[in-house]
Length: 74
Ligand code: SF4
Ligand code: SF4
Image (tube, rainbow, N blue to C red; front, side):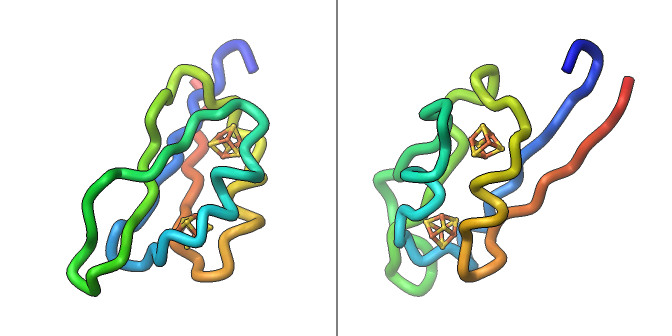
């Protein structure tokens, strides 16, 4: 993982707050935003990006395709 930068993007508008990604994340990097999106649903944000290893489990778990993972090798 040395020089690999991974960015996890979560769409607040696609997210429905089911929290499957939070349960799936082994690093505890995600959390509920504490706000609602335009549909009135809670959504998840990346809370501790430095903890994220880019494992992709959150991406795999999301039933609404609200998560994208961008990988840039330095
Ligand atoms: S990629 Fe892995 S470590 Fe990063 S937020 Fe998703 S589940 Fe957690
Ligand atoms: S799994 Fe997807 S829809 Fe569910 S809380 Fe996470 S980002 Fe939102």
